[in-house]
Image (cartoon, rainbow, N blue to C red; front, side):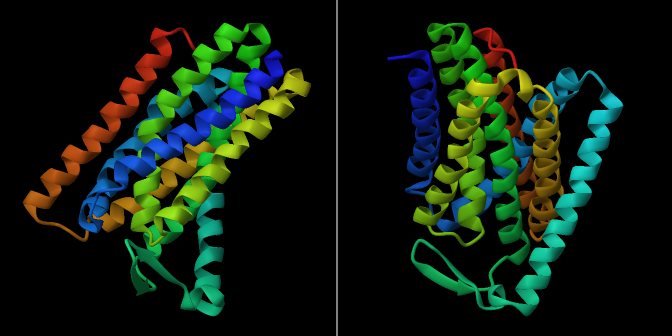
Length: 268
C-alpha cells in the first residue's frame, strides 16, 4: 500500500477503535453510573484543554496573547451558539424533543447537559481535524512513524472519547446515536488527513486556530454545562465522589499525554 493509503486507513481504524472502546466500556453501565461519569468527563475535558491543547496551540502559534485571545473569542462564540440552541429549543422543534437512555424515554431531560453534548462534539471535531494533520505529517515522513503516531493518538483519544460518550448518553442520546455522532466526528480526522496530505504547507496556520477553538469548546462545556449539573448534588459524599472521578479523568488524560511524549510523538 502507498503511504497515503496507510494514512487514511490508520485514521479510519483509529477513529472507529476509540469510539468502539468507549461504547464497549459503557455498554454494561447503568444510567446512574453513566451520570456519575459526567464527573470523569469534566476532569478529562479540563485536563485535555489545559494539559494538551492550549500548550500546543501556544507552541504552534508562537504568540501566547494571540492564542489566549482566540480561546476567549471561542468561549464567547460557543456562548452565543448555545443561546441560539436555547432559543430554538424554546420556540422550535427542539421544544418537543425526547431522548432515551437504555430504552427509557423522557421529555426535555437535562437541557443544559444535552446542549453541552452537542457543543462538545463540535469541539471534538476541531480536535480530530488537528489529529488528522499530525498523522498525515508523520506518514509523509515515514510509514513506521505514521503508524506509531496513529497508535499513540488513539491511546490518547480513548479516555477523552469515554468521557464524550458518557456525556452524550447522559444528555439523552441512545447508545446507537451516540456512537454515530462519535464516528461522524472521527471522520473529520480522515478528511483533514487527506486535505493535509495535498496541502500540508498551507495547513500550518489552521492548526493553532483549530486547537484554540477546541480548547474553548472543552473549557466552555466543562464550566458552563457539566459543572452546574454536578452542583445539583451538594452533599459531602457526592462532592468527594465527584472530586475523585474528576481526578481520575485528569490523571487518565495526563497519562495518555505522557505516552505520546514517551514514543516521541510531537503535537500535543
